[in-house]
Amino acid sequence: MTTEIRVHADDHGEGRYTILVDGQPAGELDYRTIDGRRAFTHTGIRDRYEGQGLAGQLARRVLDDARAEGLQIIPLCPYVAGYLEKHPGDQDLVDQEAWARLKG
Image (cartoon, rainbow, N blue to C red):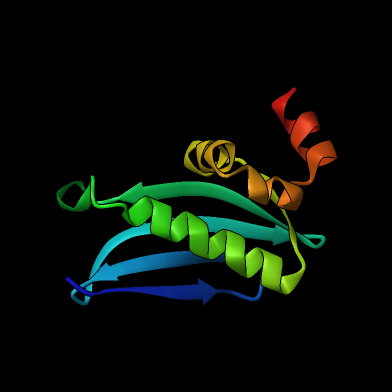
């Protein structure tokens, strides 16, 4: 099994990371970039690919990219929020003020 992650972004700050397995789309992680922050909004893995760690690979990649680009993040997606709980070394990426406002 070979995996590849592709990044698709448009001019309006919306984008998607797509993970491919043997060339076939297996899942995605959607985001919006607003004012120097990247808000992760959705992570989904196709049923036949669940349980293979693909969502974790996507989460790792988006966090690494945000760090490399100097962006703070807002983990609106429950999967990304849970991933951050398990990987406290990435908590510094979170815009805590914006996240607290959104959580209510």
